[in-house]
Length: 599
Image (tube, rainbow, N blue to C red):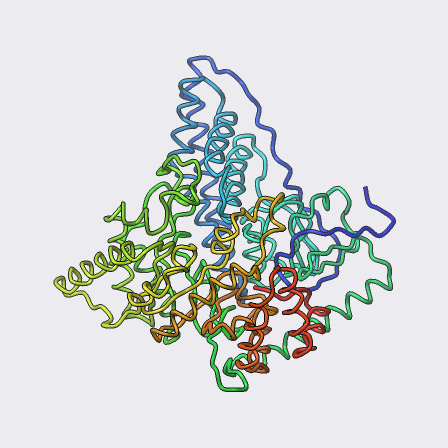
């Protein structure tokens, strides 16, 4: 039903920007898989139906991929192809194919029901996961399963009717094939979905293509009909259905103001991020795919502060080989050379392992994962270290070990790296002579012995997302305790000061790659603490650079001294915000134009 009155909905701000246009619904309702018991003589025919549906699904995705590659002058196409390739691999996943075949043979159920059961089993492996990105991969399993089921039923799995240019796409959710076809065949203005998170593929691709998006709205598909006017504020997560004529004009003005302000900010792209008292802060990016590099550079990124290598594992049951890893790392390094690229070794274990390789764990976030898992799997770790060192000659590589809890772990990892380097030297493989080696500090134990770890490291990188959770003892995905997640908690600030002071004594740089780094309200505090590199999402860089260039490090140090004398997180937040708005009143204007600025 199309409402006659204006409706305002709030969701998750997934990709910044403002758009206004006509609603174009895309029906992604789940297909109903029928259940039927087979006669024994029907089993072979049903297995053949399954094989045919899998082959058709693969051909369809290959065709979508080809359309994306052929699309002229469309930024971010390779981002789509990476996700589509992941879905093509899922079609060959043994847990899907063999499980569906087993159900047909042993339980004598039809192929549609077997695929539904097999995908449900795979999804259950993702059910209780702390990492938001990996939670969202359950949707990818759904998309693959639904494509196969629709092909079994003779239904079209992809968007059939292309939307008009400038349409606002409204859907319950969208598959990578949907977003590929919608974005690369037509210039759509924005996306709005009932479901999803900042890490869903719709959000990832929308950010890469700089298309406004709001996800997780909840009921947009039940309220908006085709042709309704819709205004989308992707910076604040606000969607307005049927805005009044006056409101439409306001949104058009806001859109123009957003684009103009963005261009003003981008004028500083090639200027140094240096304070008024001559302290330089490197502003880098967090990436998962090499295809994010152009957007990062366009926003003034001075390198990569965190490249997450575990994304090589998404959608597969086997380990990526040394050769495949080498080519991936080489592409990233060459794309940014001579800028530094910090590549984090596998943060694997628990939920982050390929589905077929999972180990049972009651609390995978605190179990056998990251450096602990890598040291227990030396052959896997060796393959990654070999690939990294081989790729080092193609750019400015920095290697970072995650979740280090003590010096012994760091030394063990360094020994293995030295062995691999010597192995490559004997083989005659070219390797860069000096490759800086650092650690991610995300455990309170590492923060408390930062002085000892600094003696063994070339740099620190603070992973605030986990450090804050472990320090305060909360899961920020748990809505009952999420309110306690406070980056400016006194305990967190004291740990950050310990880390930065230890690094300063040893003369090594300190980076920060958590969400705290991209929140412009924290910039002066982080400069005052002595953080020398901030790594964030590309679009946040111009905002942070603007503050850095107008700030004095001495004022940051004074602010840090002042807030360390306070007691509660609320008092500290109030003091920091008051100081930031006093020194940088333009931040209020930025919030009015762009919404809360963070990366």
